[in-house]
Image: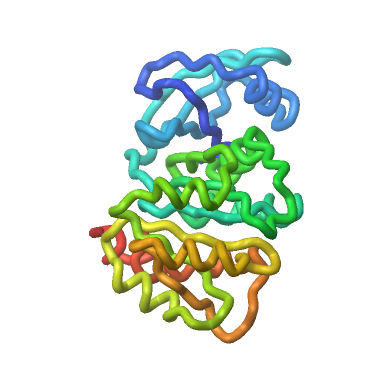
Length: 247
């Protein structure tokens, strides 16, 4: 089975003829140096994963044919991530790991202490696509435009629990919090370096759906807190275990 796996925005049905984008064609031909008759895997976030045979490969365009389905589609868990953008390499880490950890939607939020408000959505989408291709998930997380935390909280959906990482140490353990809301739509909110401002924390706590969560006795960097919180969520109520799959 090929190790090359691409997300494509095209229908995938057995016998379907595929014309790859210019970017994907360049990757297949000039980077991976594939030839006619070689096979790759493709998914589109809707119909699962399929085996594709390349039927025409040249420097500018590649074509293929869908041979068979290798995995039926299954969506990622209903978990969102809200995070305050940090320095470039650390934000890259957050996008990559959130994708690998099965986040369904990623929302950059601007807070009072956000270090970087230069959010390049196209870059985030490209990083999420690449991470999804590599980790073998069958969909790609939705990336939203950056928005102020206050504005996003104003229209917060009533049915979705909001687990915010509380550096004050007053929150309950992540495992306890997640188990108490098992089976419900959820979101994890991680603040900027330096934490939330006092008034921001007050507004978060006012939300009926907000749950104060602690990640232990140590203060974690923002990117570490994202990976830690999502890992605990997946291990307790997500798709890392049979119970999560049933939910």
